[in-house]
Length: 390
Image (tube, rainbow, N blue to C red; front, side, top):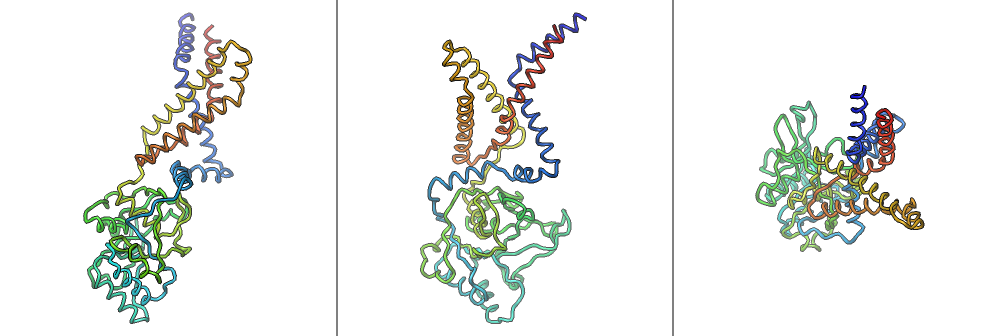
C-alpha cells in the first residue's frame, strides 16, 4: 500500500516537472477533439470548408498586395485575345506579335479541327509552319483510370503534319472547388508523361531543363506581379513590351476561364504567367510539413504557455498592490498575447518573403486558443494525483 501511494506521489511530482510540454500536448488534444466534431458534423460543413481552404500564404500575399505597387515583370507580357473571334484575326494577331521579335510565344488556345473559313485555317497553319518559337496548347481528355489517365487529346488540326512545340493546358479537376495554389508540371496520356504548357514554355525559353516533368505539380509563387496586358488590336503600339520577352496569347475576360487564387479571381492566362514565372525564377513556395511542422508547432505552443505562466508569476511577485492589479488586468494580458502572436507572424512573413518558405501558423495559433482549457485540465489532473497520493 505504501509503495502504491509512493508511486502516485511520484506521478504527481513528475507531472509538475513536465508541466509545460504536457499542457501544450493537452491543448492539441482539445483542438483535435474540436476538429473531430467540426469535420464530422454536417451542420458545421461551412466551417470545415473555411478551415480546409485556409493558408497562411494567402495572408502573406494580401500583405504584399496592400503594401505597395507590385513590380512589373520583365519576362512576360500578355496579349489579350478576348475580342478576337475568327482564326483569320487570331493569325493576324500572331503575325503582329512575331513582327515585334518576341523570344517565345505561348498560345492558350487549341485550334481543333478545320472550320468553314478556309482562309483562316490556312493563315493559322501558315503561322505554325513559319515560326518555331510558338508553344501551342493541347488538352487531354477521356480520363480512363489512374494508370493510363487520359487516352486522347484535343490538338490543333496542323499538329500532326507540322513539327510544333505543345504543352498541356488542362487544369486540375478540383480547381473549381477551391483556391488554386498549385499547377501541374506534367500529365499522363496513355501511361506516358506529357509536359504541361508552363514547363514547355519555361524550358524552351531558358534553353535548358529548369523544370522536370517527373515532379507532378509545383506550388505557384503568387507574389504580386504586374504583367503588362496588350489588347490584340494594339500590338504594334507596344513593341518594347514584346521584344525578347515571353508573350502569352490568351483571353483575359472569359468567365469560363477564371480561377480562384490567393490573389482573388484571375484569368487562366494570368495563372499560366505566374506558373511560368515561378519555374523560371525557381522561387516556388516551400511548405514546411511533416514531422518538422508538428515539432515547430508544438514548441511554439509550449513556449507560449511558458511565457504566460512566467508572466503571471512575475506580476504576482510585485510588492505594490496597485502595480499587481494593473499588470494582472485581463486587457494587459491580451495585449501581450497579441504582441507575441504578431511577432510570430512577422518572423514567418520574413521567412516567406526572404526565402519562399511558408510555415502555417494556423495549427499553433489554434492550439494556443485552447491553452487555458488545457491548463485547467492539467490543474485538475495534478490535484487529483496529489489527493490520491496523500
